[in-house]
Structure formats: structure tokens, C-alpha cells
Length: 78
Image 1 (tube, rainbow, N blue to C red):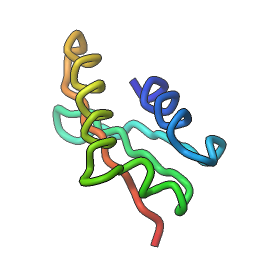
Image 2: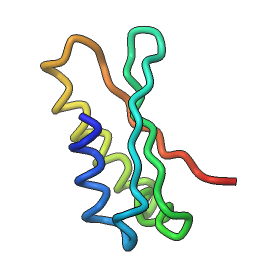
Image 3: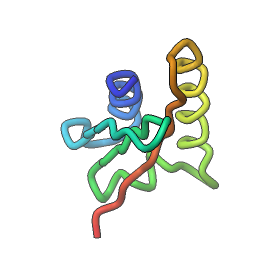
Image 4: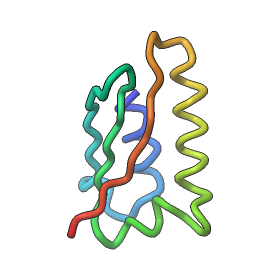
């Protein structure tokens, strides 16, 4: 699932080399933590969160056949 989210994010951002996705298990859920370049955070979130909402819908549809649910989080560097 991480590869799918990374591939989709690379098509959206202006710096595809900076896209990183790490899978972390939290309880019974797999959380995909996505990091992008600081200039691309707005692109990946989109206007009113539409882009990240669409990415989460794709992830939900793709993970339906998996034994545990998946979530997507966008991590921002401080």
C-alpha cells in the first residue's frame, strides 16, 4: 500500500524524490506516514483538503482486501 501512495504522491508534487512513505503499526491499524518536501505540503493536501481526501479514499478502496485497515497521515517538518 505504501508503494501505491508514494507513486500517486510523486505524480502530484514538484519534488518527487522527496516523497517518503513509512508504514507503522498502531494497534490493529497500519498507518502510512507520508513525508514530502516543505514546498509540496500544500499540493498534497490540496484546496480544502480535497487531494488528501482523494488519496485516503483510494487507500481505503485498495486496502479492503487486506486483513487490517490502513490510514494515511501527512507529516510536516517543523
